[in-house]
Every structure is written in C-alpha cells, then in structure tokens.
Length: 489
Ligand code: NAI
Ligand code: MG
Image (cartoon, rainbow, N blue to C red; front, side):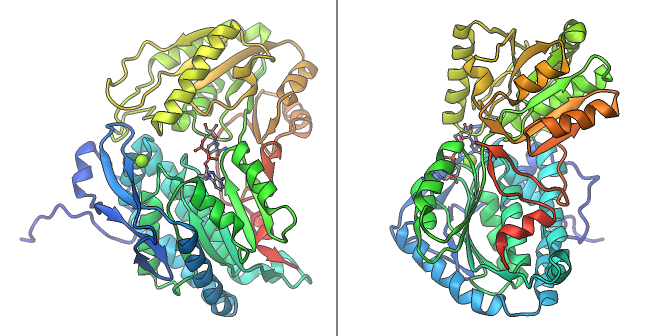
C-alpha cells in the first residue's frame, strides 16, 4: 500500500473538492526570511534590512521580508533592460507558451497560494480559494492567448513593446493584482519590476518562485519588496519606461507629479466610492445579496466596493430590514475557516483608519448600525456596519473608508440618484438593480463610472476592461484595452 503522506497533491488540475481547513497551514512551508527576486534568483538586499510581515488575524509574525533600496531597484531595472533585448525579440508564440506555463503552475499550486494569501492578508479562505487564485490564473491564460495575436488586436498599427514596466500594487488583492500587472506586460513583450505592498508580500514572492520554476528567462520578471520608498525608487528610475500603479489616490497623485516631464507612460487605478442603486422594481432579495457582496466582500478592502447604498424611498424600509437580517447571519472571524464571511482587517493602520471613520460618521449625525456578532478579541476585526440616514455632504459618504462600512441614502427619482451618485470625486464603479432594461441602459450611460454592474456586483473577468474616471485614475486593465498601455504604435 502506498504510504500516506500529508504533502499537498501537485496535480495539473486543482482539486476543487478539497476545502482547506485551518489545520492545513501546517502543510504550508514559509521561509523565515525572503529575499529580493532579481535576474532570476533570490538575492539579499543591499541594505541588509528586513521587515516583518504578520498574520492580521492572529498578530503572529509570519516571516521577514527584504527591503529593497535605490541600489536594488537599479540592479533590477538593469536586469529587466538586459532581458528586454531578448524577450522582446523571441517569437510571440513562444512568449505565449511561457505565460501559459505560469498560468498552469498557478493552478497546480492554487491551494498553497490561497492559504498563504489568507494568512498574510486576512481575507476569507473561501475568497482566496474560489476567487483570487482562480482569477489570477485566468488572467495569465487570457493574456497568454493575446501574445501572438497583437497584429489582429491592432491591425495595421505595428504594435511594439515599450521596455521596462515598473508595477506597484496594493494589499487588498495581492496575487490577483500581480497577475493583472504582469500578464499583459509579458504578453506584449515587456519586462517587469514589480513591487507588492508591504503588508502582503508573500504571494508575490511565491509567484517569484513559480516564475523561476517556469523557466521564464532571467530578468524578465523581477520582484522587489519594500514600502513607499522602494515604490518611489521604481517610479523615479530613469530607465523605467512605464509605470502601472494601483493604490490610494494620494500616492497616485504623488506618482503623477514625480513623472511629470518624463516620457514614462502611466496608468493609475486608484480609490473608489461606488453607488449601489436599488430601484423599487428590483428583485429585492437578490439585491440584498448584491449589497452584502458589494460592501462586505474582502472586508470592504475593494476599490470598486459598493460602499454607498441608494435605495428608492418606497422600498427603503423593507430593504434595510432585510439587509439587517442578512447581516446578522454573517460570520466574522478566522479567515482560514471556510465558513467565515468576513475575515481580518489587513493591518492595524487600516483598522485605525476605519475606526476613525466610525467616529466621524457618528459625529456627523449618521446613525451607526452594526451586526451583533461576536468578533475575536485578538487580531484586527471590524463588525459589518451601516451608516443609516447618511447625507451627501458627510465625509463617510464622500471619502473612501476601505472597510466593511456602508452608507445608506434614499432617493425618489432617477434624476436625483444620478446626480447624487456622480457627485463625488471618484468614478470607478457602480451597481444598478432594477427589472427594467431601459433603466439599466439609461444609467450605464449617465453614471460616470468605469464599470457598471447591473443586477449583480463585484464580478470580475479577464476579458472585461477595468478602470476609472476622475480621481479613480486613468487607463484600463483587462481585456483588449489592457494591452494598450504596454504598447507603442
Ligand atoms: P498606498 O497607496 O500607500 O499603497 C499602495 C502601494 O503603493 C504599496 O505598494 C505602497 O508601498 C506603494 N507606495 C506608497 N507610497 C509610495 C510612493 N510614494 N511611491 C510609490 N509607491 C508608493 O495605500 P495604503 O497606505 O496602503 O492605504 C491607504 C488607503 O489607500 C486605504 O485606506 C484605501 O483607502 C486606499 N487604497 C486603495 C486601494 C485601491 O485599490 N483603490 C488599494 C490600497 C489602498
Ligand atoms: Mg501580512
């Protein structure tokens, strides 16, 4: 009889019937210390400095992460430049094959990625396992397919790669954002220097291991860890040809200033404060599910979260009652438990920020409502929260909270709700719930939002472009549009 082993099975397809349970973390091998991934190998940081990454649900330290400085950035950019001369010249079909290989390896290692994502960032395992990791692999599959079809995507325009792309990503979807950045860059023949966010570097470093194992030529993808200063060093490096940033609007503005006057290309995917609009003719039970998914998915750490609810006055009482009932059923707690709905807030800083807004909302006169669930005493947690009777001028309505906090406003007419939905500095996404197709078409054309979901929310697909208006940034990621920022014509 074959010896029973506890090793995770590494077969080609992911075994979806398998559901990681908390004890599965013992199968996950984390190193004590992670170095920088430059030119195909892991190297020590120039400064010899490391910083700790924590599990936000337990507050335990998971590993030490290298902090890259200007010299490390220069080394990575040089490696990427050298790699570009070869990578941009190999046949497009060959390039596609490498990207397919990355996608397949990600599926093989899906379980490990999901558990580490949840340990390092705090999101429920159900989300890492069923959404983040499969979507990340799909993104590589999708862009692998484009690699040898660029002539068809842009007929008669002779698309060419730009060079070295500097990519800076946030902590809310660490692996998925790495995939959104790396896949289109490689498909178009560019090379990459990517920096994950300082609280969630582990899955990007696992991706570095995967990329090394995939045989991708050295230097095509370099992964540097560190905080804001490392990001700024990438932005300011003279040999970076393109910056792709996802994160806060404040840092987005700093980056825009920093590269003003250079010929660096830039795409910014910044904050959001989306309206989720429920009309009286909507299927209300489905709408309530959509409201819950819109704001409580990933603890509300979602740039396109439906964080402003607009309910038509005639159904406001019933929708709010159903919403409160549904909120009572949400389980807040151990992110590694597959029954958990709302995991840990990503960092102490973020929890402080959310709590600050809870105070501000109350002071402004909105009515705070929280579900009565218990939350763990250790770790960073926040109950699902509503601000009822919120008004347009409240800071909790105007500013991005990035937590499980939903403001509730009512409206009477379609004109009124369009006006209120648009009266905000952001324009990333929106949701519309109605039985009438005509209303959907009317609103999708009048809402200043890059993505408008109708009778659903927070659905992502690699074929669909994503990006914002106004202070939510510019440029599109995903779909055919997502190739453009990495090409010159
Ligand atoms: P952040 O914008 O500071 O961090 C995002 C990334 O930018 C990280 O990798 C960070 O190391 C890097 N970074 C920081 N300063 C930089 C600089 N000067 N130059 C280049 N890169 C730099 O976001 P933070 O502080 O982690 O979160 C603060 C708030 O930002 C959140 O509460 C949320 O409201 C918003 N946010 C929005 C995101 C979105 O996807 N819309 C994602 C993350 C944060
Ligand atoms: Mg962490």
